[in-house]
Amino acid sequence: MTTGREWWRTAVIYQIYPRSFADADGDGIGDLKGITSRLPALAELGVDAVWLSPFFLSPQRDAGYDVADYTRVDPLFGTMRDFDQLLEAAHALDLRVIVDMVPNHTSSDHKWFREALASPPRSAERDRYIFRDGKGPGGDRPPNNWQSVFGGSMWDRLTGEDGLPEQWYLHIFDSSQPDLNWENPWVRERFKDVLRFWLDRGVDGFRVDVAHGMIKQAGLPDYRPPKSGASMGGEADDPPYWGQDGVHEIWREWHELLAEYPGDRVLCAEAWVGPLTKMALWVRPDEMHQAFNFDYMFAGWSAKDQRRVIDESIAAFSAVGAPATWVLSNHDVIRHASRLALGADSPQGDGIGPTSKGKPDPVVGLRRARAASALMLALPGGAYLYQGEELGLPEVIELPDAARQDPTWFRTKGEKYGRDGCRVPIPWEASAPAYGFSPTGAAWLPQPEEWAVYARDRQEGVTGSTLALYEDALRLRRTRRLGAGAVEWLPEFARSSTVVAFSNRDVTVVANLGMRSVTLPEGRVLLESAPTTIGANGKRMLPADATAWLG
Ligand code: NOJ
Image 1 (cartoon, helix red, strand yellow):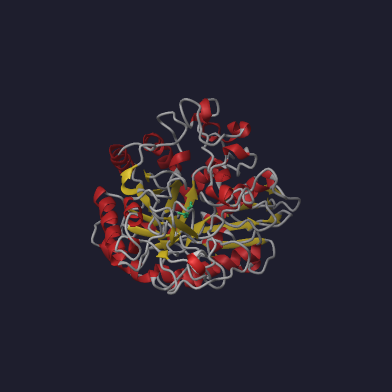
Image 2 (cartoon, protein in one colour):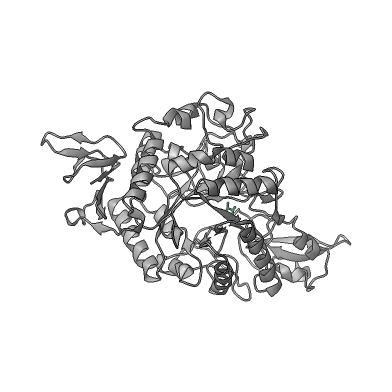
């Protein structure tokens, strides 16, 4: 654990997706006890904190991002006692614990929504959510033309007890995820109670889901997106449901609330807003502490794009006194061991499946992923890892249609594969049932037959394995204090079309994104994502799609 004040400024935070991390009870869905049993492996890996995706009471229509009670553990994942034990075990291992807060919407099973449905239009209960009358004769048309991120309209219509059509309610995501009305002080107060509940239990902070969606433009005007369907945001102009200024007041209130607690608790925004200078407004000193850097995640695999996004990130975040953050994968995007080998755009949520055009080459993908991760872990600031990337896991492309569970798949009628391919339970032991994920061999999404090679036990202590690369990078990052360092571009490569090269403290980092080997500067190799060689000129060479650290 990074000690001292503001530990998060340099921390590496590991995302656990509870359904797919470790299953102790053998039902095929990961759980809290499973996580606790595997925490020592994460401490060995060398991360500072874990972020847990939602494990709260939920009908699981969006894998737990549809919360029916924010202060209860879903029996699928265990009990509150299991959570307390997890927290205690993590803290004993010097790992901090961040939980996921989902304030933009609840599940339609939430008591607040059920009470709203049972109350008349324009009642206080309805005002907790975004209910509107429809347009046109009989109110038959939705209140506006907004399209759900998961496909289809953002509005669903109620049917009254008399069987007649009634008001409409807004849901940016699935119809089972009604949006809350954050203009309503009642909603704000309830969430403060929820935050206190978890802070009192001892959590170290919150990752805030859809933090850019909570305030909608007054009047809910129609919006025509640049391409068909909705996206998670980040386009040049913000739609009326993303990135509205009103959200900042909420973060200031949350910031103050966290500051009442000892121990540097942290807020991290999931906010798909662009450009980075706008994103940085979210992490001003009295707002959130961190925000995911999605511009970095989706930067092209070219020296120019990488240098640009690194420069822009550091400039934008440091202008407001916040650390830059870096992230390459999460539970919503194609794993970077596949994404980096895809030529075309691969937007959040689209996914990739058996009939997708242009499949990624797994060898190229893994080489690039290792090079990208080695580059990322040398950068100053905070970094986020997604479970399984330390094993080099690729996206699972060949999932049978019948196994798919992402609402995106259903709401787009199979047009978008969605996110199941990055959520397949991870392999721990090559020869155990479900590769050690669950004692019975059950897994909620089928694991590919060829995954034994990625199992953790196959990589432990193996020089050159992806796991060893991450362990070495994390150890060096810590001992050389790279998280608190600075990027200084090496002048000889500053305009290179293939090489990204900088020094951070006493470490020189060289990434070769081109097709040919390049000569490395002088220095002892501390880390290499692919074997360096000695060239005909007697100098050390870095192969294509590889990163080396010298010192
Ligand atoms: C972002 C989460 O990361 C994603 O998994 C979820 O579907 C949406 N928010 C809705 O909560």
